[in-house]
Image 1 (spheres, rainbow, N blue to C red):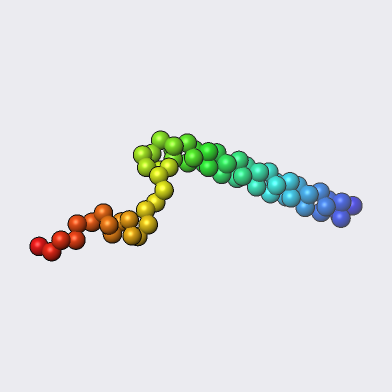
Image 2 (image 1 turned 180 degrees about the vertical axis):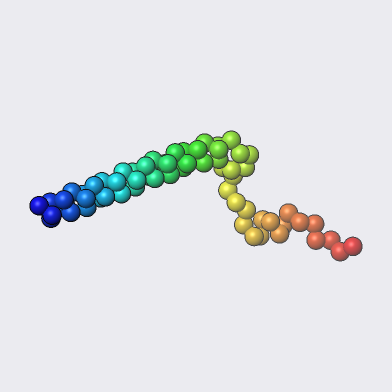
Length: 64
């Protein structure tokens, strides 16, 4: 009888942990979708990053 109660308690805790993990996963999926949607609205988000050589070439390196 005692082992049955213990098994029920352990199973209940395992179910709660599984439900919590599922809820966290859903929250993270929602956050990911929001971040992807925001990235489409930001200017330059889709533009590839420049290489170091391109960044250096864009500076005016004339001595003053």
